Length: 473
Image (cartoon, rainbow, N blue to C red; front, side):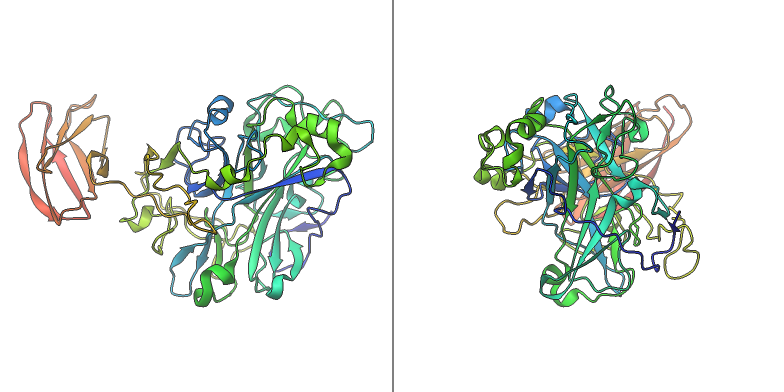
């Protein structure tokens, strides 16, 4: 058994998305939105790091099959596929310490029908099926583990010459472009739509793509997902390659923690029907397969924008910005940069990661405005994905308290904002923090306890933090 924990070892993963002679088709998705959501791992909450999403326009923190399929459109040119696909976003760190969010081409989803034997049938998964590939906590590489070999990075050099594929972000190769990619598990327990730790699916033991599933497990179509970043083209003169310059959104410069997610939005049985009816015609293109071709609308896929939810990052605060409009110095979610190899005990970036114990997440989930702010723009080619910034209104004030105090934010027609708090379940004095993003150079505030005994606070220039001790009720 070969176990690799240091990225300096020159083991190459020699896999190709198109190496198989099995039937397959591929769908190029433009990016839909990049945001700190993850409806599989952290449903209903702000995710710890930024993901780039493609798929159904109805992306929400609590997405379900029903909500996704109710979306108006999808970035898939097969409009019947209302799935969502996502992976960690990629940043470039300059030698000066700035972090640049690199625009992604979106994702390419390959649906491959690799089987262990010609008589093996594909199972139809439940509507609310979902699964992941990779593990955000992985800190080593084991060549005997299919789940490790299923994750790789394609380095693209000058003149689009494809280098070997690596199980880590190459630190001894200057990549003009890089393609993080993942094979998803192809064996299903036949029962569950999802289990914690992805336990409802597994990889074939001897070949993560076309090997034999364990006894009692069912074969499902094999998803291969890749994201593409044109580093030198998009960054131009800002791009100067050096080891550790490419950083995943969770802070990893090595790549062992790379992962990808898929939440099903296909009509029941459609993926299997495509194979059963069109397998001899599925050689990448879908035009010769009516099951898929009948819902193709490339114009609609290119025009599709997000209409669901987004993490309401504040561009004005460096610690919370995505970095799509201005460069940042701290990753969203306050993720420290680290090396995911467990033997990286010296050097610029080491293992493990050391999060700030005092960091308090303040970003909240908000509805995407009707003008699509925060969604990747369909007006530009390639798409641009600007930061979402709160409009100056009540929603531009965030409040955090030290206990269960309830805080009501009121804004008058003149722009004066008052913060009215009660003591919640704790009768002792509490503190309150207000973060203000206002169009005015000066904003007036007042606060009060539940008895409404208010007192004025000095005006202050935006942006600003204010900490107040609230009187007990």
